[in-house]
Every structure is written in C-alpha cells, then in structure tokens.
Length: 221
Image 1: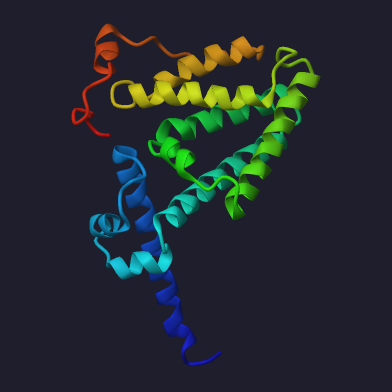
Image 2 (image 1 turned 45 degrees about the horizontal axis):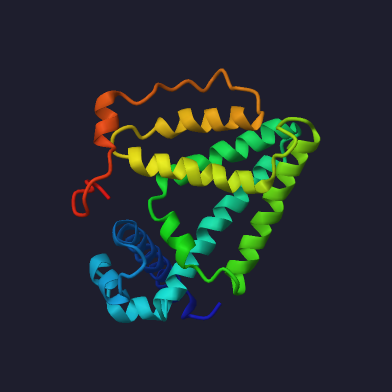
C-alpha cells in the first residue's frame, strides 16, 4: 500500500457526500420549480463551490440523468424483490404498493421523468431493464388469473401516474390518502382486496386544503 492511499479515502468520501448533497438539493429545487434551475443556483443552495458541482455534473442534463438512473435503479430493486415472490398476485401487489409508496414521497419524480435522456446511455438501459421486469410481473399475474384478462404492464404505469396525482395533491394534508385509492385501483384490476389496507376518505376540510392553489401559495412544495 502506498503512503498516499490513506489520504485518498476521506477525499473519496467527501466527493460522495458532495455528490449526494448536489442531488438532494436539485431534487428539492426541481420539486418546487421544475428542471430549469441552473447549476450555479444549485451550488449556492447546497452551500458548495460551483466548480465542485461542474466536476460532478458538467451540465444540467447530466444531473437530471443521474437522478433518473438512481430512481429507476431503486424501482428495479423493488421489481426484482417482487419477482422473487412465488405467488403472482402477491408479487404484483407487492410491487404496486412499494412503487406507489416511493412515488408518494418523491415530489420531483415527474420533473425528472419529463427531462431525462430516455433514449441514451445508462438511462435507456435502466428504463428497458425495468420495463422487462414490470412486463413479467403483469404477464405472470394475468396468466395466473390473478387480475383481469386484459391487464398489461401499461396499467402499472397508469396506476402510478394516478396515485402520484393523488399523493402530490394531498401530501401536506393527508399523506396516506393515496393508499385508499391504490386499493380501489388494485381491486379494479382484479386483485383480491387486502383486509390489512384500511384508510378513511378525505374529510371536507382536507379536501378543501388540497384544492389547487395559485403559484406561490403551495405551502411546503
């Protein structure tokens, strides 16, 4: 081992901390303002030097693509775990609920999806990997008769879009409201209802609080 090696380790740790700080800061700003926030502003908000940001991410697109790849790697992990379950209905339900849980907490996901380079490099490979796994979960459940015969993987993505819309609207007033509607949709797909999933409808006050507000009055967004 060379004498320099011990000194390299904290530098690598610092670089990873900076990378994580840049990405979490970008997430927060993207959720509020979309993917038009310049790297200079992300650096300022993160409290690190502009040069550090540009060393990790030479342009905004590379940062968006890194956020996409990180997210889809997580969805890949969820899908792989679901695929290991022996029961097709349980496997599909597991993935739908786990993915919906993540989507409900991820305020910047839609921005990242809309702006990633979907047809190039690691982004395309990760997207295609996830697509194959979700296809498998859907086909397996349909073949087993666990869902309606016309259920396809596109229904999985539509499910997450709908749950995401509910979660985004109710995040600050009823953060678990999405679960009720996830259950309704899954039963509509033909999956057996889960006796463990019991949630209440929004109250009148919560419904009013979740009503669309003018830009600049979005609370914690």
